[in-house]
Image (cartoon, rainbow, N blue to C red):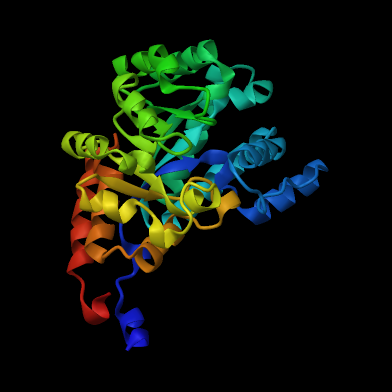
Length: 338
């Protein structure tokens, strides 16, 4: 019977979805990393076997060593978009860090423009709408954050869709970056900071009040505060959740205990994302499979998460309408149609 049920299951690759929590460098294919590292004569950064966030952050920096050449960055973006298309993505919002490429392109602004150029071309080739989330690194300080926010704001409506806030939460509270996020919001960009991963509900509250968050990346520790869960549900602020990342970085012990099911039951909108596939393993499709098989989400819940990953973004009206129709079609399939 289990075998028959597996055969009859709806194909998750055909479920239209967005990918909203994906750091660009860590979307690299492992084989591409091996090849580029050999070309540049650098030691391949270890991409597994780490424990905890600090070790993870150090390994992430190692990925940048192979991306100093323009053609390598262009290849990374093209392959990442192709992989997203294969996983059923209609929309991808890459977290980009143009500040890491100043030596290659000369300035934050020139770097961001090149990211936009490569992303637009790859999106057109593979039939995926692409938006860029310019990501502030908490550990770099407030003034660099404002520089990034101004560069992002100047490109609103030209492919930049949001301002993010990443890296170590502990010791770098969201409220310190309010000025940068005010710049972004004034330009019509979404506020999409990381919060509620390494620090508890207080981090999410700050993201909501100080940064006027439209979306929260991670946010799963909101479940520790009933009032916060109610606030998220009432406001409709979605959480861009990363299942495998939460386990590997010690946020939760096991996928069977992940808060996603409880958050959805409480009325909190959530999307499903991969965060850093080269470090954590699964891509977007793999995370949906894990959500079904290990977290226990129903197809109706998976479809709701997929719609959240499209509807709560600045994706175009055409993309949203097409995704809505195809999600409904996916849910309506039965038997051999699946």
